[in-house]
Length: 179
Image 1 (cartoon, one colour):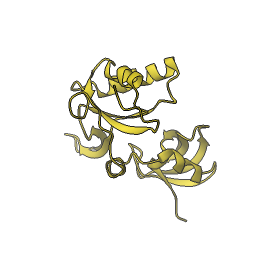
Image 2 (spheres, rainbow, N blue to C red):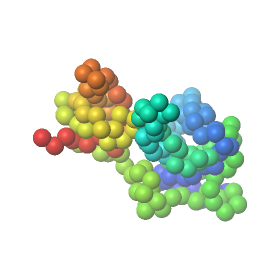
Image 3 (tube, rainbow, N blue to C red):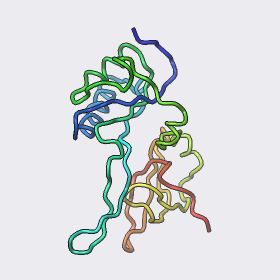
Image 4 (cartoon, rainbow, N blue to C red):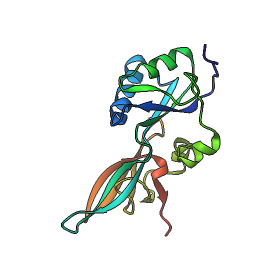
């Protein structure tokens, strides 16, 4: 039996190679279909944005998985949630000794940038001028157009090649622009 702690923690889930996105999508569908968002809060695939030069000399931003074959899940660990995640197609198991999952420490969570981006959304308001600091649109500036009711996503109208383009981002991917 799993030690049932009622506090949500981040856990590392091992997947088959190349199945990270499929596992994330499948888990999100299961969470939505079964109404489990109160016990399995978030699923992330840590990525970094790298600028690569193509054969023609053109530079483009490309996302690379920082930890291939791993997905990070924020959840309240119970027998039921363990079973749901463990039996998702593409999952081989949790990281930890034997079949006992080990939660990430606060330091590990912070180093992965998983901290508390949702609380950070409250420091933004519609109309704020912001700079995008993460994701494929990093470096662009824009204006906050909307904030989701759950503070999980912020829509920014970014100025791209002279056109306003709406971009949905996590709060930890933007910062208030200094005037």
